[in-house]
Length: 613
Image 1 (spheres, one colour):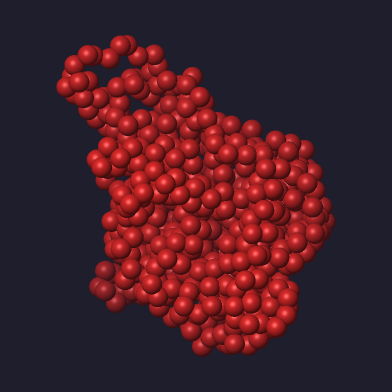
Image 2: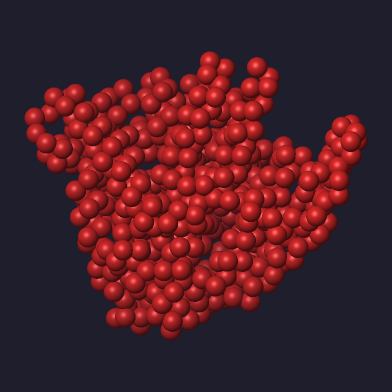
């Protein structure tokens, strides 16, 4: 379903005078106004970045390296007010009609992001600061260990300073959680239990007790020892830094986690078992879920419409699965085939460290194979490298979904595809390839790396994030890989691609089922299990993910279907002149976009191709 972006933005656009009758003068005017706007975007992007020291670190910058940022409600409000004022300044200062087409796109994206922020403010207490998927209690130590790079004594001092900021950061987040709870908004019991378990893991081991070094202490010591080995610091400085780091962990880190554990344990009796979604558990849940569907799909599709698309896609994909089952001459129905895939040992690596390494090696090999075909399908290729890693022990969960962390825009830090490998029985070999293509190449790593490397658009667009676009591209990439040589050569890996796609179709059904139709967690698990070969451990993890992040799971299939639709339309319009590399470069060449703006961009490319032809 299409959204009327232009009508939404109409109120923001300033009235413009009549254009000149001189084309050369018009072009010069557009260039001048576009240059002014792009310079303004760079200025505002830098101002916005100052609100977020963590984002600076992700970008490879070291300014405000000793800060985590302001996690308070007042800080969030200040940032929103800045955003609103900046957008008002944009609408008052620039003539939309005289901008270039690309500049108009930038203008519309900025306005769209502002509207999302403004409308989202009323739902600031509906989210869960601490949960098993995106909880800040695991994000911040992951950030410090994996992304705060230490190359000097001052970098290590900044690391320690950030550890010392954790009590204030978590204190503000606990305030949010308590206010939400007072409003009757809290995560399900399983999320509370996971937060307690994960938090206790983080403060287990030295220097908190007599056990082996905790993850954070081991990392801090390694960083200091490396500085000493490289001659950046002497032995006395190393000893002092270790003493300061240990004090920060004992006096800041541990009390911060003790506070989280105490709060969550006190609220645990109030949390629901076998919960349903936000539509019935939150006082403003119906409005909140509608908002979430809009932000996640960037369409105005209703829950009922999305639910029906899911049902239709599940039916279609089951038909393709049955056809493939018959092709491999399996004697039994689809449910029996699912059981065969889940029970036969040939479809799992050993549940050992050797088996885990085999998984990482095979995923890396699949990515290396597909890299060789990229020039035939893309003109733009990423500069940043990609590595496959196991999730850190303190946040690893059996059956949890794999995920991706971007590298730096300059390529100095590679992108990382993280795999949860604690339970190898939850990692089917037939799905190894498709996940590698989704998280790595040509999926998230390629799309995000290319976006970050763009120099033809304002910097804020290189960091824009619209879930329907980013996840839609990754799911489209799984499907696109079928066209590329050397992929899915094993029919079971081909079945893995279908399993992955039906998984995303099922998401449309169960996410809307729980959050808009009152389905319980168990009802959603049963529907998922009846229509997919995904292991039950993974299914339960998935359903619990959807319960704490409403709407996000709907973005994948909605985005994929739109990209496929745009490709079909372009192929029909251009016929033999259709260029797959040109299409992909057009989709990737503007950074992440709301789906209607992506459609506008592709349609403009089609028109330019027809004109050139």
